[in-house]
Length: 181
Image 1 (cartoon, rainbow, N blue to C red):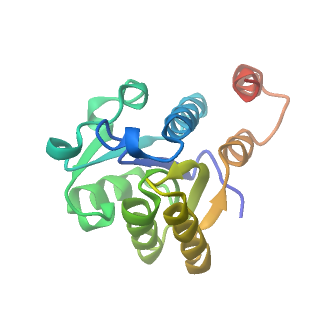
Image 2: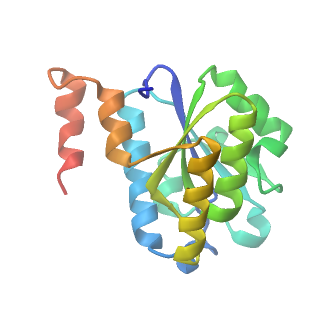
């Protein structure tokens, strides 16, 4: 099953100021989530961010937050984003059945949100190089479990190349420099 730009949206889960410094390879996760959002913008894929209890964990890190509009940030108190009616309604209103998930923590909010999205009938694609937890073993266990439950594990470049679909377009030429670091 390929990921389509017209059928997907990006959901970045809880990449927040007070948690990010404790995340294993946190800088890489922020960079990869930001990269994914930038490519999504180029191919008209909607983006939503969640913030878990921002009064305690702070808001989304500035590098990621600066890439979205205020109305694209969704506050929550449940670990699973789908336990929040306003987030469930917001995702449904987009009319996209493929959800591309990035964020933290892999074994808590990312896992619970991804499994709940599956239960709601979405196709869930977890961007392995844009998710992590405080401890690497928690990330590994979360990815293993999600894979067993039916979440499709991908990388940021897999997502981008599937969105782009072909190399002979203006958007491909515009996005291509992002692939070279």
